[in-house]
Length: 229
Image: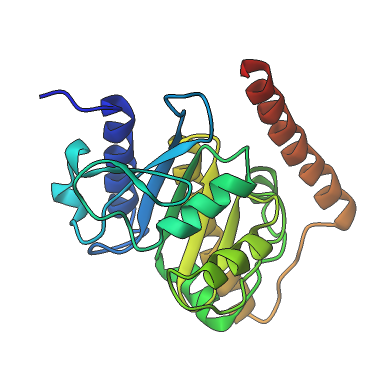
């Protein structure tokens, strides 16, 4: 039996299972979504993982489609408890094509410590966009959480969610997953470096140049989206 948006739903399942296999989450925690084009050509809609379904048994039929107000469009499951966070990012970040929310160990350590991660690795600046900030604490699944995370995220591709985990943004699922993998590696490097008592950050002029590369790539993506309208 065919389902609507089958290819996109399969991609969400694949990314969610890869997220779990990479150790970025465990059990049924975390979530994955991708932006879909509306049938009517209007506001975007979102395909997102359901709540409470273990990743190994996840199927395309389990993926739920909602609009940006979290109204159901397709699918019988209950969308992730953090769907509001995803839809608010899509609403305010037109460059975001996919989002993963992770509970990886070292990013979660940074979340518990309230520890921003400074520019310490060149590739992280170019892919993530600079210092990774920790959001202010807010109750899970709330509008306050979405607002707090978006404030920490800014125009970057990752943010740490206080006492919770991390959120990672990409132009597509592949990039969002790569952001999650790199963020966890970055958090681990920073943790061990800080434990030695000395962290050498990248010189400010280099950081500025690398953020310019990040912004240039982001702007090129936005221009590409505009040309398709």
